[in-house]
Each structure stands twice: as structure tokens, then as C-alpha cells.
Length: 98
Image (tube, rainbow, N blue to C red; front, side, top):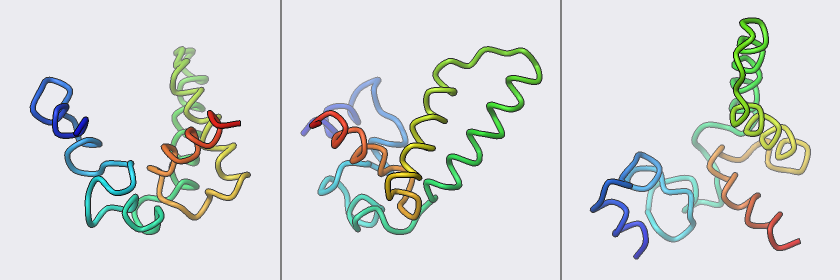
């Protein structure tokens, strides 16, 4: 229901209407298949690392990018390395439950 509301408003975005990370909301996306397929978490961590290096070299602060990089690195160390990057939804949900 929330995805439908978002997709009919200014909150509409790629992750809500095309690649929803919440299991059971959409068919044909990694979240519907235990986060298999798609763009891997390790690749996301690598790309965020490249971004972080560039930001550091140019003295550009990217606090949210740095946090995202840290989250994806932790995910890789906790069994999410071979899952789609959208598994961050599942990871953060599990972290919240602890």
C-alpha cells in the first residue's frame, strides 16, 4: 500500500516503482528471490569505496556516502556479499531488531 501511495506522489522513485527492495511487493526483482541476481553487494561496496577515495582526494565531504560505504562493507562481512545490493533493506531491518 505504501509503495502505491509513494508511486502516485512526489515520492515516486526508481527504488519504489521499478526495483522495490521489500520482499513481496514486486515480482521479477531480487527482493522477490531472496535477493539473488541483480547488482551485488560486493560491487556496491567497491563502487562506494572508489567514490570515497575520490572524495578524499578532492577534499570533498560526503558524510552519507561514507556511511553507505561502511554499511555495505559490514554487509559483506556478515553474509550479504553475494546478495543484491537491495538486501540492505533486509540487513538494516535485522540490525534494528537486535
